[in-house]
Every structure is written in structure tokens, then in C-alpha cells.
Image 1 (cartoon, rainbow, N blue to C red):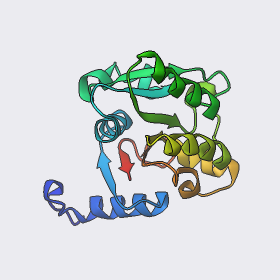
Image 2 (image 1 turned 180 degrees about the horizontal axis):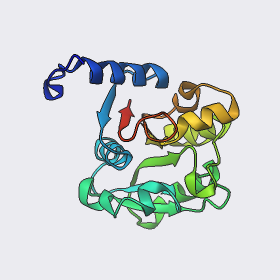
Image 3 (image 1 turned 180 degrees about the vertical axis):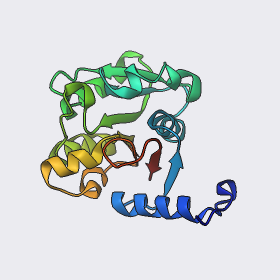
Image 4 (image 1 turned 90 degrees about the vertical axis):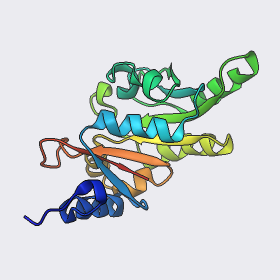
Length: 189
């Protein structure tokens, strides 16, 4: 295999993988990282402002399964919202944003998860993503999609990955979630 120093962007295999990921997600660029957790944490660090809240579903991976890394890595606190049907609804985001008038921390980022693993892998439709994205954009916030299984979601509902993530600032997906690789994730944006 042709190889190079990835630290200098010289590895043609990694470069090609990142190009394919950016093309598949309709984003400008992609970064290969070892894990989905690392990709999510990088997104939090890049998109969220220090000392703010990040809205997410109460069973979201970023909230439950990343060892409270958001506080340590991005200096933010996560605010979980109801997700009993597997969605973070636009109305719930609006209610949380209204709470800002009551001396709660400012909100800088909203994270969604498609598919939603704790809800038996329930995929979000494009319309559901757009509804949340419209609230996020109106409020001047950023949107990250934990898309560990977003390729599964796209197949399940018969659409492209790019159409499910085109409203997000960043999306990550895992190569080990049905894409044939034992490890690795890509953060795209």
C-alpha cells in the first residue's frame, strides 16, 4: 500500500477516505479519527463556546456514553431533553431556549443523533432534522449530528446521507457501524 505521514496530510489512503467521506456527506472536508467519541468531542470543542450549554437528547451517546468528556474537553455542560420517542423535538429545543430568560447558562450548540441508538436505531427523517435545524439557525446556534449510524438511517428511509445532514454544521459517522471497518470515524463539516 502506498503510505505517507498522515500528520502532514501525506497519506494517500487516509486522504482518499476523507475525500470520500466529505463527498458522501456533502461537506467541504472530513477528518479521520480513531473513534466516534473522539469525533463527537472534537465537534463539541469546535462548535460550542466555553461556559455554555449544549442541548442533546437524554439518552444521547454524547451525554450518556462519553464519560462526561464534554465538561473536560470543551468546558461546556450538556443539558439533556426528553427523547422518549427517539427524537429531540424542535418544540423541546424552543422550550429550552426560552429558559435563557431565567438566568440559565447560554446555549451554543444542539446535538442530534441519527440513528438514535437507545430508541432501537430509530432513524430521523429529513423533515425532522430540518425542523430542529430551523430553530437552531433562527437562534444563531450550531448543530452537530452524531451520525454514528447515519448510513443505516439513509438506507432505512431511502435517501442519501447528504440529505440527512445538510443542515448540520458537523456530522460524524463510524466506519464500524455497518460500513465494513473494525475501527475509525470521520468528522465532516
